[in-house]
Image (spheres, rainbow, N blue to C red):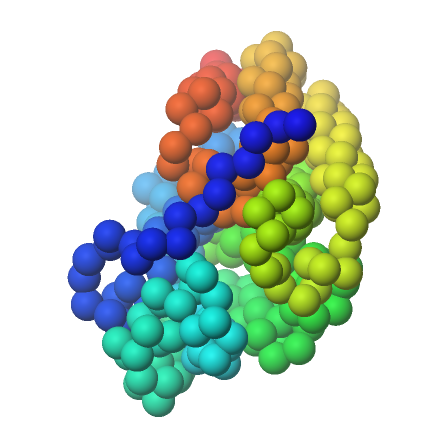
Amino acid sequence: MPALTTPSTTRPTTSGPAWLRALRPRQWVKNVLVLAPVLPAGPQVDGSTFVGAGVAFVLFCLVSSSVYLVNDARDVESDRAHPRKRYRPIAAGELSVGRAVALAVLLAVVGLGAGFAWEPGLAVVLAVYLVIQLAYCFGMKHEPVIELASVASGFLLRMLAGGTAAGIPLSRWFLLTAAFGSLFMAAGKRYGEARRGELTGEAVRRVVEKYSTSYLRFVWTMAATVVVTTYALWCLEVLSDSPWSVVSIVPFVLAVLRYAVDVDRGAAEEPEEIALHDRVLVGLAGAWVVTMLLAVWA
């Protein structure tokens, strides 16, 4: 049976003011997904494209942190009984619930307002993300499958935000690849938590108890199959006539398989941690970026 790395239950060594740590800046790495539509855009890319994607990244950091604050404020009592979450600033009493909610409202208002000022469509994407995630915080997270879709939507909406802010039209194959890639990561997160509960006896959230690991394995296997298929069709039918578009399928598939190794051993509960520490996966991602750039520019 694959080994599972059990998350530490000791106090985190991260430093900084409580309000900043409550924003979960380590999770901002997920917002790099706003750059996903930029790579295949080819000749459409110019300075304003990257500025738009940068704006989407910053605003998604604000709005997603707003959601984290609301979630932690709402779950403060249950977090205090959790071996790891009890060290979060709100649960630990370092940041009051009232101040956390006020900061969440401020971040949401600034994020949506700036998004509307830049591009109304970006504000719409941010608003949809905010509504879905708040619904998740206030009840959807307890409903199997529905909560899985809401988690997956967060990854997908980041990519939509990048394309919208940068003025890049998105093909249907890109959207299908993004959607099922998002489901793959979301199911991997739940599978990781379920595996940790099985092997360590640590309490898991109520909705995870309603899934079996075999069901979650079915979901992420199905999603991985579809994402590889749609990406290959995107390369063959839409991306470009360059042979590099076909070559890019190789590092893409290998990256999916490498990530699946982490999912299978139950270590994909935090995708941002894998992105930061799996050097082989980072190398494959780099190879994919290079082949993608060659496909659209060579």
